[in-house]
Length: 177
Image (cartoon, rainbow, N blue to C red; front, side, top):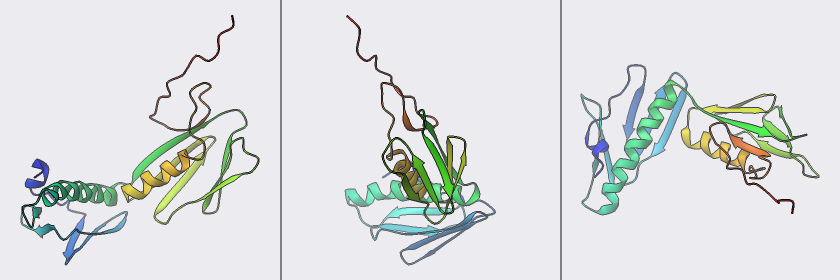
């Protein structure tokens, strides 16, 4: 069983956590998140915080306790301060525009690529920097990965969409004889 899951997880003052059956709900200033809990994992609201236990002695149940402890921590952090992911668009003639609830990319294809922004996520565009933020860490990360997959960075010129904290290992290319 996870060492972090053995300790009770404290609940912040501004955050409200409710456990009903197999549904976990976290409410905060930035939104409300719900997650269904696996039947092998038990959650109880105690005086010190939320205690996560394995309902049986299987290897899967022990592994899932740590997973759900991490999910709960990220949910509580997300409803207090939203998760952010930054992306940078590099390349001559590459552009991104925010039109309503979709991002429109011009990245060297014969057509423009349009991505619809999911519910609970906000995206802002300043020049060629895209900032994605929201309360749910999974949705923010998945949408950032979908944006990056439109045109992943290539190693020779560094063109494409990369995360703001990502470094691209550049290759030398052809040498003249």
